[in-house]
Length: 315
Image (cartoon, rainbow, N blue to C red; front, side, top):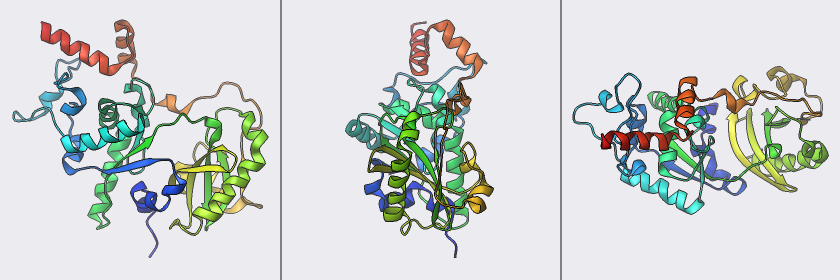
């Protein structure tokens, strides 16, 4: 029976096998009550994330998050799960968050840092609750369960590190052979990559041959790495080989499956291309909110919510 790419590419499946070759990570299983919370329409942050400062959020139509709850509903609380997350934050200092497969990159506009870097519970919960990408992961987990293919829904907390875009690469495997390597940031030219192209390719090939090829369970897949210095390459993630993982790279699907003569082919931007669109900017703050925050003199959503609540309490 063929292995399921969705299951094999979930970090809950592969991380234990590749721990020594991956970025430092803690994988927490999401409890059922927190899954229900993420699926609920009401936007109320848990007690542990707000220290009881935020009870609800008032929207422009005068309604609040609590209007969508039953009369018996209250601000949610997840003491055990929150403690697990807080313990990791305390240990790592700052974390990068994702679920089984996706990051909440579509919700970065709500974050204080405008990134996936979190240093508090409220930042973690705000990203998770605001992200459609996380919602799709939850739906995928439930769909697998319907087909008797259980996979635990996970919150992934990686130790935050500032990563230079020129050190990130996506690698493509076809029939268990490494056929392509591509810089992840295809919006600009990086002189470092051009200067180090031979040693970069050698280091990634060595990692694949020695650590990945005979251990990962799929024939066709992608994997992302950072190569932060010579002979130091770390696995970031695994993904299925499909249009979504190839889109936005320097390869096409057809090239990868049939046109690579001398694999692996290493593709990178070889000259300055000028100003190019930056993918994360596609997930931007809605214009109405941007105008509101500009008037109020703040881009910190959490702080704005707190100030609004304090004003209401005074009134």
